[in-house]
Picture (tube, rainbow, N blue to C red):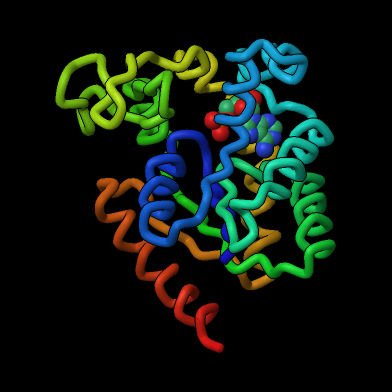
Length: 222
Ligand code: AMP
């Protein structure tokens, strides 16, 4: 099964991706996580994307699509994968089409997490992220058991530098300008599933599983 998670920053894509990964065993490919890991290791890729990420702008399409191409060629993606935060522009969607066509793979579903700006801002400004395993928390809605530390791996929780108010505003603006068009494009192709994502995470997960269970059953049929 190959799926894309689409929606503005703060829609809950990362949180839902973890639930999907657990239930269906699909590796989560988050371009944001890949870029942050590259920045952490100060690789040439990390140095080249730093300014874009810290200012909330998009990393150029060619760079992003090359990172995804390399990642989906890994053995763990052979049985399917989930893209979280890619594609974000029409050229990236075309690059994905080409990557899938070269492997004769279908895109099974695009899950569109629809959220209002107010909820997105509230989620992002309260978000805390584990520096070790990337798990996300929220200071009010999903606090860790021990303040400041990850429940899963014990890593220290920090606020992402791009989760500051000014950068959040910029990222939402970039989404409206460059990514929203993809909703119409995938809808036209008949692969888009809209999910009301202002709800609590567990409710959103139930909607996601209801959709994916059907697709999964269809895909598993001989
Ligand atoms: P995210 O973790 O998905 O919120 O992404 C964090 C930042 O990484 C974004 O604000 C962009 O600067 C960059 N980024 C992540 N995915 C992409 C993408 N598909 N295209 C361009 N830039 C991206």
